Length: 446
Length: 147
Image 1 (cartoon, rainbow over the protein chains, first blue to last red):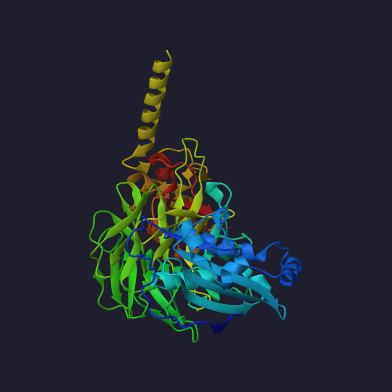
Image 2: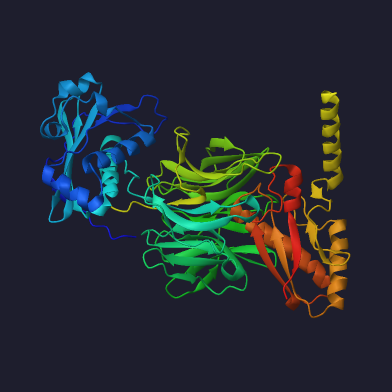
């Protein structure tokens, strides 16, 4: 991943605990907070420089559009139309005329300024509580100009955190499998993009089938399944250098890989003689450890964030169900007892929930349950969908959905979707091609 | 006239479907190729199952007989699942299906050295349909010559 070059330079005013606006994200939000995102102002000199450097006519508006789009996608904010804004961006940033902003029903306002300082992009922004007539937050930072979209994501993260009390998930990336071609012979490539679908990049050429990519905790490495030379094995890819290596020399298929929360191990399934078991491999000394020992299928392992437990998928009861065990493989307990089949358990980064795919009566569901199996909640139902992955703050799930083909076998497509933990705000995540197997990175900057 | 045409079309459709499946195991020949003359190349499975049916065992005995006669031929058993399952579980399921075919060939005298196994899970369906008949054709283990 490109090196993160962001310095928070100044806190203009320390944040005090006023009784200011707050956004509740624990329930489906039926009355999103009206917020005005004023375009960031730019002086003439900087504007000219940005035009040359980035081929962007108005970088201030471009960055504020990133912020606006992010806020709108959360479903928690109603971003107001710029046409109605009365105050000029540069003046609003100095001292908003709160009456003007409350007139258009804004409750919160974001203003800012972007300049070039020593060939670096410098941005400062403020968050205002319109009704209280107070500044809630002021921050400034510098970065390389090509990082301008990330600036928009970081501003959104800060605003989201200030207004909801929880970390954001906007300065993040999604790694996924880009798909093309007929359903019977799909060409699949690893691809990476910003959380909002921009800056898409392909990481493999499509010469071999690739599946299920997952980030390591620092977002620099990806583990995935590749059919290179028709030998399905777990691989490791360094995103920055592009170096790929096979993980371990197993005498059969390895699949369903994920990193341990400390990034030191890969946990995966190894299939031999009709039996799939879960193994870990220490990436430093390459020591392999067998974790499960059962003649049934054991796969889709996922660690708890503290690394002490593993949830996984097994059909030892006769059908696919979700189990939890200690990370040494002892104390195996089945936790899914509802009607239907359960697969792809993924532990929430907050530690309290497990997301899963459920198949019941010909329909597929994405759902969550507590780690002891109680409190099952189904968030969305469809013809086919699976493989949820958590946003780093544990508030949103991304997954993929495939369409039913018609009687001629035509009309197949696979797309990424996201949904809030509340079950609200389901939306398609834009991708250049068809897409599947999404995996959400952690926050790139903190 | 049109109504009766539609009706008869429907009727033949239903008949055709039930004629090609027993339970939900594919029994037709649409997608089946020959490993050698008179030796079908694939066997089919019920949903979520890896057990060989009577017909599958019959096919595999033919394959074993042919492989005994052609001792220089090695094979790859390609295990597949239908699209109605999660990707990772289906990879394991495909592996298990190919291995039940492998085990059966071995009991009929084919050395394990001559057989390798690969699972494609749900990645390589032969029928792109989203219906029970298409799914039944896709739940399969295919024996392919490796040399």
